[in-house]
Length: 375
Image (cartoon, rainbow, N blue to C red; front, side, top):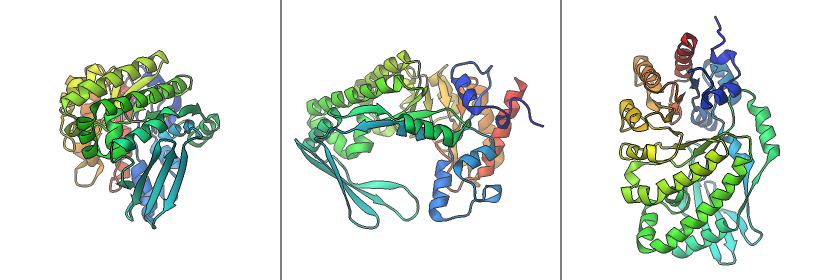
């Protein structure tokens, strides 16, 4: 029998906003990300199982009765290039494409390679290989301007309806931007060691660019703002965190909180060495911290570190796979609720895998509805 608290029976758009504003009466939101599961199966040409056969992602969320954290809204923010920056691309093979950016201070290129098993890609050649390439990237970022695209916003509102409120993730912060977007870990570490002044000058340009984006974000109707950093403690010695990441986080949070935004960051690697910094960041919460048996922390360690900060997600993704019994999943869901509610948006850390059991998503939803019903 449906209740007014069940996810299938409420407006999940408004409920998400009530939750982050502290107006949900202690109830929690079940908001798993299942896009990886869906995209991998579509790419492989697999038929979706059971009742999901023939459904698109929006229909699957409706069938499951859960909310989606809709990061499609990133497309509402557009970095307009300066007219002096010219982009080109060359198709090198069925799996490889070269991207080139020409500027008055030089040119840079990267080569992106796909694969045959999933829609993911990886850099065969990074944008930046030396300090001169980094200067070109500084020129590009220093000459961008951010714009809001109302037409995209309205289109996404129509597509997703009321199964979740808009969310976005910002471009990665300084060190992580080097690691993941521009040059890889090894080159970043060597450049920062050999050319500290020049790299820090690039960080200043990047921060100014991102603060211009924040000005546009604060004028937008989107309230959930994620720092999509994919932090992994094994790649971040304390000096990097304390000298670069924390100051940038605090500055971003200060600006976004002025705009009334709910601000969190995506930490999806090993986080044991990072947790001690959580309450120094200025964030409202942290997304995707992955507990044991997949990550390197227990939920109790996470709670001790976060205090009254929000946990977004919290369930190890591998507990949705067949190698673990349902009882293990139920136990971790209950522990998440017991430790973090009401400062909890329950989800999968990080996403349901391509071999995950989609019906376990429904199982967790039933547990959440039962918890909310009691309130």
